[in-house]
Image (cartoon, rainbow, N blue to C red):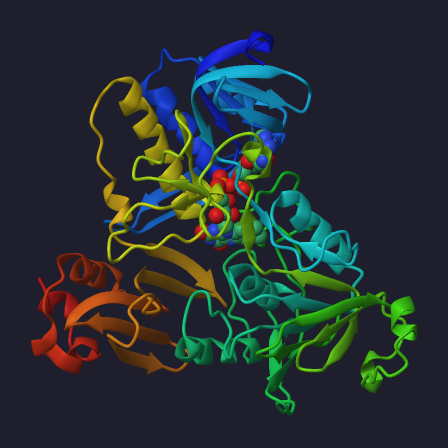
Length: 501
Ligand code: FAD
């Protein structure tokens, strides 16, 4: 392998997603003279734009897809290689690409991302959403669909069921409440009415949808109906090259085949038992289907609560698995339980000179008590940036310490058009029963939950325009004893910012 090397680069980064691109940018600015190669399977790279530091740890940015030439123009020592890595040979420090070329590296960073954890492989009616291509494929298929089943309870599922219009949506979640990955049943309860209420008007693009509630169906399922009284304005169908970003659905018209009523039906505490075609259904004469499900649906899905639905499409939104496969054969990578490449506090894997960042890796250093890994844009950016710094520090023989961004978990996003801020152990993760909760909720306006452990704040969920994020971030970071304040902490009549100044 060593003798087949076309060229040896000082740094090779695999993956043109947020982690890989940020790593390249960091390395190229820190050591402009170094030969850097970015090997990526995708024709475009993802770039962070409009970056804004909201507070000490909270950050907001957009993600755009750009031609890789933009990056090469900015960094003259960068070579972008458009091919997928087929195999890695850590002993000879070489990578082979699918187009048969071999490249050497002194230091390598694997940023290969993740791939959707599909309910079933090779079923044309089961779709995962991962990148721009799959989102556009979903859009295309949705435009002809009368009914889809969305399976999963993470961020993608939450966004989809809220955004899809003109198509009946059956939403199957395995938990007792929606959005279990991000918040508890209380927050879910706060958000549920948004599926029933008018969608608030947005500046641009503008959508106006009217929802009315139908009686909840028996057996723990909810049914919501929506009357579209206005078509989405200001957003054409697909803008060419529009990227998946924190607002990935904004540029994509998630419109089903129907113009009128839309319905979201929730099926709680169930998983998928079986997915079968209409032909296979005929082989199950014992199958009892509700009248609305009989017909010529291309695919049927049986849930573990006994219900079977016919639909046009099943969206598998059940998370991602780290995309490690091309890198493992013949090497000795330590893998975490979730399948990610284990990395230490310098983003180094167990193989010499190989680093990893983003969705492909699992942070295996001793975490700060207020931080946990979640596979999100923000962490992909932070890890890519920090991996770049570590790689540079190692070749320059400089010391480097774990970055401050790994002190406190923080994430800012939007669900059901509400601003959502998550801080620290926002769901009491890992705290067992050793914590107490303070909750303040004003229907339709805000939901504030604080997690206290030993009288100190360890996490918070802020939904709505609460303006509390900075104060709470400080309280979590400084670990002040809040026992004397008791429930006053969430008293809406107290200006908490002044209180702790
Ligand atoms: P990726 O962005 O997946 O990039 C991986 C790169 O590696 C790609 O360029 C790929 O082509 C390349 N690659 C893979 N294998 C190879 C190979 N063998 N050889 C060469 N190149 C290879 N996070 C949020 O924080 N907020 C959100 O609102 C949000 N919404 C999301 C919506 C959707 C639909 C999805 C799928 C994810 C969303 N996420 C969101 C999560 C976020 O997308 C990921 O955490 C983030 O993209 C991870 O970045 P990455 O650079 O590690 O991987």
